Amino acid sequence: MLKKLAVLFLGVVVPLLAFADDSLVKFKGGIGVIPVSSGVVPQGTQPLTADSVNRNFVRGIVPPPGQPWVIADLRADVKTDGSIEVKGRGLLLAGNAPGTNANASVFATLICGAAAPFTLLSTDTAGVRLAANGDFRIEDRLDGFPPNPCLAPILLIRTAGAGQAWFAAGIPDLPGDD
Image 1 (cartoon, one colour):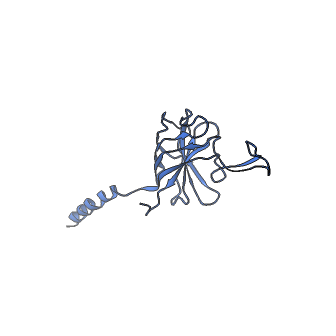
Image 2 (cartoon, helix red, strand yellow; image 1 turned 30 degrees about the vertical axis):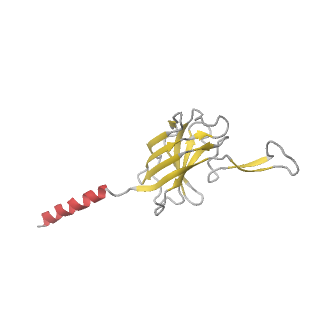
Image 3 (cartoon, rainbow, N blue to C red; image 1 turned 90 degrees about the horizontal axis):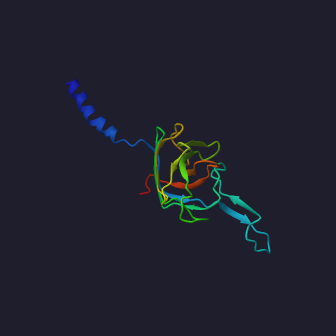
């Protein structure tokens, strides 16, 4: 009788575990970067450039690029084991040479923490190449295990190579947002 109960238990529980969601955080939608948040123009003048600007650094750490970028769509799923899948569409320049991909390669960075010190974990910084239309797919593992829970999560799509500026950010898909 005990063997039959054990088999019945395993027959019910094991399939349920297969359906368990081991997602840590998901992202649905994306926001392209505007490199400058504000600028100072001397009173009474109309210069073509501001005297000083405030650049859009994320969490005071990750720099923006020199040009604005747009993204049509972004979907990402970060698992508790650090595996990550990101699908992006239409990540393209919006400034100089609009509608092009600047021959860029991109990687993903997950930032956890509402206050410093933040946890930053990234996929391979060599990145994946953007298609001509700005589409990309990252299937990788972060360079460490993310904290669980990941508080105030930010997912950045960054340029591979010098500067590693952020081009786009994911919009967290919070429970109940359906």
